[in-house]
Length: 228
Image (cartoon, rainbow, N blue to C red; front, side, top):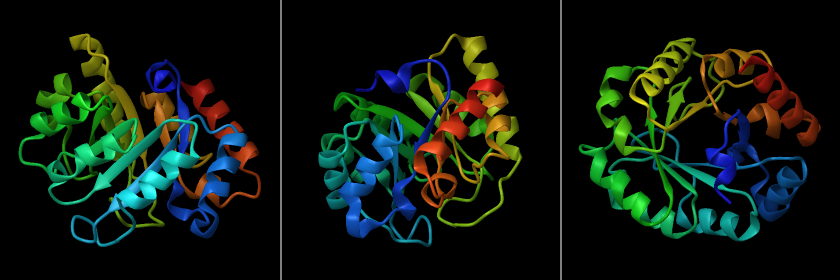
């Protein structure tokens, strides 16, 4: 199931945060039928970020409904306490914020030991220098192009510089981590993030608020592939 996450070329991961949670399984089915190759789940605790969303119960329900890989993006304090739980529930990627954990390496190793991919997320105000010493220990980096936990923000171009720098470091060191981006993705920004090196591209309202999921995903991925 995780081969799509490891293959070359950009893909769009629709974020479920804005979907109809009253018909969650149906929403997952609609997204998969529309061509979604993976899905993104935002876990927020109301402390690391102001918003409170959902936790293991919802992730487990999505795992039962979904046939495609799942990324769980943990926007929580002390993610080292619960990251392994999401891997055990069937998350294919567990992403923790470098700003939220004192020593990410043991947490990343614990996630990997459960058979999941271990990714690090980087908020807009955090420089790439913070994450560079950790790149050997992770399977991917999620560059935030908006502040985590706040909806409706404009895309921050600083993400482009970070993606390009991380892509260059990856090549220089011969590493194999995947590059992701999250926040403000639309038909106006996806070509730029793909050109900068993004491969796992999280899209929220650009898909979920569209009239046609399939058309939205197809257009976004076509633009990303053309720019990459």
